[in-house]
Amino acid sequence: MKYLGLVLLVCFGTQSVYSQDLFTILQLALDNDPTLKQAEATYRSNRELMIQSRSPLLPALGTNARTSRVTSGPADEIFRDVPDPVTGQVQSVLVQPAHSFGAGLNNHGWAVSLTQSVLDLASWYNFQSARASDRAGAVNLAAQEQDLIMRVATAYFDVLRAQELLETNLQEEEASLRSLEQTQQREEVGLVAITDVYDAQAAYDLARNTTILQRDLLQARFEALEAITGRTHSDINELREDFPIIEVDGSLADWEDQAEDNSLAIAAAEFTLDASRKTLRARKSDHLPTIAFSGTFNHDVTAPIVNAGIQIGGGAFDRSALTLTVQVPLFQGGAINSRRRQAEYDVIAAQESLEFTKRQLTQNIRNAYRRVNTDVLVIAQRQQSIVSSQTALDATELGAEVGTRNIVEVLLARQNLYRALRDYADARYNYVLDSLILKQVAGILTPQDVVELNQWLAAAE
Image (cartoon, rainbow, N blue to C red; front, side, top):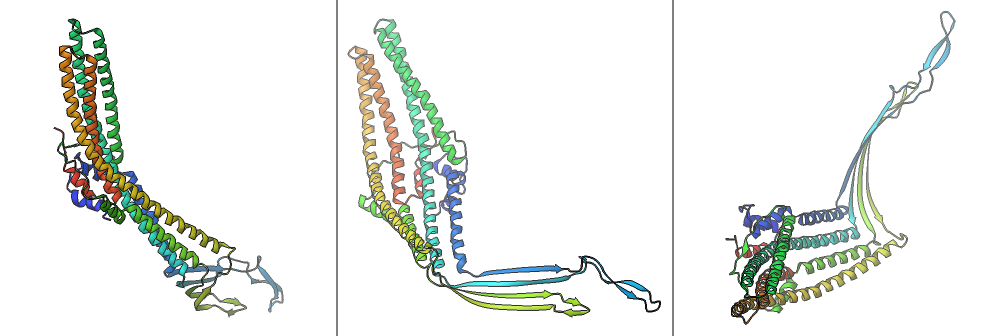
């Protein structure tokens, strides 16, 4: 899976960040979208578990140092009566001073230890399980990158959809206002009844109210885009009228095969199943013996003890030890067997999750494929509906002028025309998004699709 950030930097590194086209907004989203940043941080955090699970298989080196000071002595000074050899008088002589922290013995030393696992199947399979989980995490991150493309595209074309609907509503409002003014003039000269004025006024009020709501919706769509990019957008490039509307290239069977080979959801489920199987092998190995090698080296220096002028002990000593340890877990209160059964159930759950993902993928790819082709037919029908509605409106207005049609029929015909215009615009944007969804479901959505789509966007004239 190509990394989205690398591809974008290669393709658009020189593009101005102030441009209002689709791929630049996608680049802004890549830099500022909190959802993707959270997914990246979560992936990197989980990746550390793989490194941690590998550590029991690698050498462990440690060292320590120690020092101590030992003081001893009586709590009080000790004196002894000794006769003076000259005078014969008895004198009190200090035999042993009281305890003092100043005089003491210093002991110090250091040690180095090395431990290496020789045989530990449980730790080995735990590491293999963590590697498979890391691969599943990488696939899920790639899915988040594809989801970013879809979220940006959806927000972008929702803005365009709201803009076009607002423009259509403004046209309808203007047409309703002209119709109201014409009806008022005709009522003043007695050509129509006052009820026609009321009907025209109601149609204008409804169009005006719809315009107000549509302005608010457009602002909300801009804010939804801003929430992804972290930037304010006042205007964006529009979809060109000559944007090609074509059926899906390839048969449904081809797309199903492609989805099965490239689906990120299936890849993640397969890696998760592999991780569960490795965990099961680790739990089955918990009752097997483990062998570990360890070596230590100690260097100790002790001060001698002086007693009655005689030094006892003291000196520097070195000590080394090489140990080969074999451990056999016999019974741990049933925990070993319980963890093995838990791992077996986890494998079953992962297998069923994979099967469900495959079935869901088949359903989603078929629905997405069918929806795109249906959009093509709908757009063609919407175009024909606009032509038919315009023809009907022209005929109804002509009939109203000669008295064979009334104002209500004219208003209904005009509503049908603008409804057809809105439906046509809505269908075009549905086609664009559904085409991207089809590629996302198939697992082949890349920034290159944004590049190709961006070529059909242009600044409003």
